[in-house]
Image: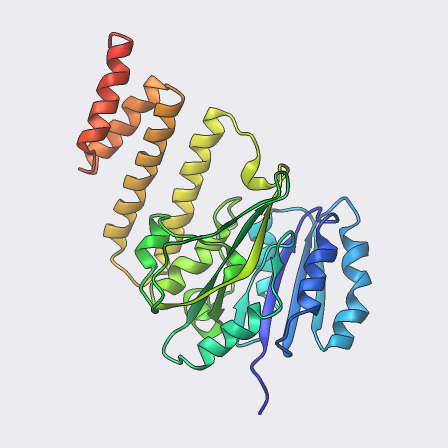
Length: 309
């Protein structure tokens, strides 16, 4: 019996330093039936040369390899481009600077094939800091039974590492029949995960099947100004609002929760940088949502009193 096809979609921008590791992790997969859709998001380095150098190796391994080039438009736009081409029954979208362990795909397919009523599964994984050579587990607090992770994702109380997850394409297409997510510069993983999680439980494999390499030039570690941090939190909340529009949930309730969380995250960031005007703004926002907590009132009062205001 033919094994179901797994579609791997990976956007990449200037990934020459990491692509050998990435492509070798595809070649080393124990699962045989794969298609790889690799989207070069307008790289100015040797990304194209390196990616195409693996074409023969991948095809000899039996991987259906599609290389796509686009002008630089961001990771979500590149992901959208790749999503137009997949043909598989299962979807995973690892980053080009990370690594899947050899059994990463096989174990997730086995789980989903043996749990036909579940449309998504995730594994655990490792954060590896290349600057310090330190490793830590992505999460030590995961329900080992299939569980509803919709609200945990919505409130960012759980991890969304792309290569840890695999979803059934049928459920993805229920969310995005046009195969098109919002092309924001943040939160593309949540755009895929939140709507799917609103429709299904999520399985869990208690093994470290994905390695996230943390390095100083990564997008998540980029030094941002105070205003850039506030905007990033605003943009992420907007992405979640868009994800709710294609989710099966109480839209009004969920959007209120998103806004509560946005103000709360901005409040604590404002505390950390002693930004009094933003403290007022975020407290006002939480009051309108009826969500301000006593400890936040105390912090607010303390910082206002320090300036005699």
